[in-house]
Length: 146
Image (cartoon, rainbow, N blue to C red; front, top):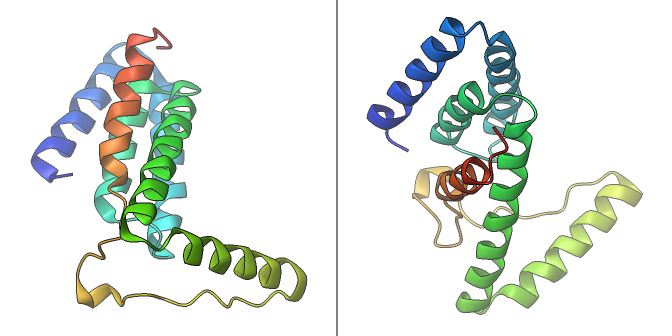
């Protein structure tokens, strides 16, 4: 997500929540920001996802942001599986995942290889999480959860 979209969404949500004395939305945004920053520092997601999810949290609040995150994650996983199938690497990725999970749980050893270094650009297997967060946000909004 671009900052010229994310920052106004966050700021208007912040002003709206403060104006309506809805401090739980602001607390939810702080918690989401902290959790997603940990994910970003570990290399799982990009900074745009952190900012955009925080912006959604300040609008949706708790617990609706959890529904958005859950639905967005499910959609992203489904997309990722179809993408792996399209690239012809689904079977290989499932085997690596199961072996990696086994070694991590039993021996506390991380054996999952990095397919591409971060400085090499965007991998063709990458999943655009923000896109699925937008879809999930609209679905949750129109379902009337918030």
